[in-house]
Structures are given as structure tokens and as C-alpha cells.
Length: 379
Ligand code: NCD
Image (tube, rainbow, N blue to C red):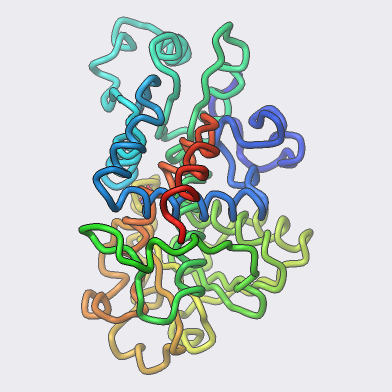
């Protein structure tokens, strides 16, 4: 199979069944695998894990969950956050892991095909978490693993310009928490343990806080895979309005606009952030993805039109949430970091809990975690 299978084209309804088991994500490759219920259950599970993980005893319990399984992090594209977030998530649920981050240290230099390398990995490990520059490669790996006598799950930690579903899960978790919490509070948990309120019943995420809200995506939307994945999750929330603010040559793909229109999601295009700031409830900033340039073609773009500066804060809605998948360059002025609107550090922290929840769910230890939570962490 061609590694670079384009992400668009085939309908996700055809693609999802091969990735799921019992109607639940087994391989995690596409954001379209997650319906509203799956998103809500994962968010609640992530809240439970963070509450349990707030005490020494709870941490010890969590570490027994997957101590009998092993993960391989096959990350052959640069990564700091996603890689470390997955390693931290594995540590939270006690899953030992190994890593390959550089093809030059694998037998691929002896002429082994990448497919064979992955087949070999699947015999040592129980989970492959991968980041790869080729679009569709994680999906190809999922199909390949389905053909192996011992099928293990694969999680897509970023595939080319196409998708980054686990980033989208932590993004929607962050938005749901931001719209749920009294404004300015970043949650009940403290770095050193559970506060009394963290021990209250983990709230359900069954409401739709997105109805009537405008979420703007800003910057390099053509090549930003996090944006593509998050739009698939947001279209599970009827009444949300998506605004895509980008240089015309880096505007969101037609396939996404078509997908949203089929699902009745209102979309609008823009090309100057300043003109739209005041209408936004959420702003998702992105950097210029110039590593995908063929010949430096994006150098001429005036990225100031797609940047947030301190003087724009006067136009912010009181409950605006600003997100950024990071790394950031200059598109979000650092003076905004101290405002309660800035949620990008929360995203980083939330990602670890969300990824722990996702892995727990794939390996069906979510039930044990829920039971433990209800037994010890609710009044
Ligand atoms: C993003 C990615 O790799 O797609 N980063 C991340 O995973 N947090 C965004 C980016 O690189 O700009």
C-alpha cells in the first residue's frame, strides 16, 4: 500500500470500522473515530485520573494498571511535547516504554523496510505510539497490524500535514474545562495533590457548551494537522461556528469545509485576525509550518495579520479561551501569557491526563479506574 495515502477522499465512515473494536477506538488514527460520547467519557476519565494521581496512594494504584504491558514510541519526526506527554502518560498508568527517534539507529539503514521494522516492533511491544512525516502512514500501520497474527494498537501522534487526533482530544478537553469552570480557575487540582474540590464527583461533560459559540482557527491552517483534527471533534457539537482566519494560500482545506457543511456546521473564512477578535469565544493560534515549504514560498507572508498582540486584549470577550498547540514563535505575544484567557499551558498539562485516559481506555482498564475513583474519591 502507498504510504502517502491521502487523508481526504474516502469517507471516514468507510475508514473508521477497521480502526475500532466493539465500536470503540482501538487504533487511534483519525479524530473522526471519536463521537460525542467517546469524547465525554475520555474527558471524565482524564479528570478521574488526575484526581487519583493527586495522592501517593492513588499514584501507586494507577501505576499497577498497565505495568504488565509495554509501549514503543516510534517518533521519527521532531517532537518535544507530544513525545514527553506520552512518556508521562505511560508513567502515570505504569506502562514501561521504549523509544526509536532516529531511523539511522534502526535496521532500516541495512535496507529493512519501514513496514518490516514496525512488524518487528509489534512482536516486542503491546502498543505503538508513532509520529511520522507521511500522511496516512499511521492508518497504513493500523491496517498492517490488523493482518499480523498478534494485533496490537497504534496511536497516531501526528501524521504529516494530515491529523493529530490526541492533540485534538486534549484541545477539546481544555475547551470543555475552560467553558465549564468559573472563569480564571484552571481546575481544582494543585501541583502537589488533590484539594477538597478535586475529590468531589468528576463532573460529566454531557452539555454542549459550544452551541452559539465562535471558535476561530488562526494561521497556517493548510498544513496544521492539529487544526484539522480539532475541527472533526468540534463538529460533534451542533451550534458551534468555526471561523478560519488564514493567509489565502494557507487557508483550511476544502475537504474540511465540505465535511463541516455536510454536518450543518456554520463556517466562515477570514484573512485578518484583528477584524474578528471581538466575536470569538475561543481562538486557536498556530505557527507558520514552513518546514513544509518547497522553496521558501511562505517567507513573503505578513504573519502579523495572524498574530495576537497585547493591544487586542481590550476586544477580548470576558470568557475568551486562547489555545495554541505549541511550539509558538511570535504569533502570541508573551505579555498575554499571564491573562486568564491564556489556556496553552493548561493544554500541555491536560494532555498528559488525556493521553493516560486514552491508553487506559484502549486497554480496557478504564472500568477499574472508574471503580477506584467512585470507591475512594467521592463523598
Ligand atoms: C504540533 C504538531 O506537531 O503538529 N505540535 C504539537 O504536537 N503540540 C503543532 C506544530 O508543530 O506547530
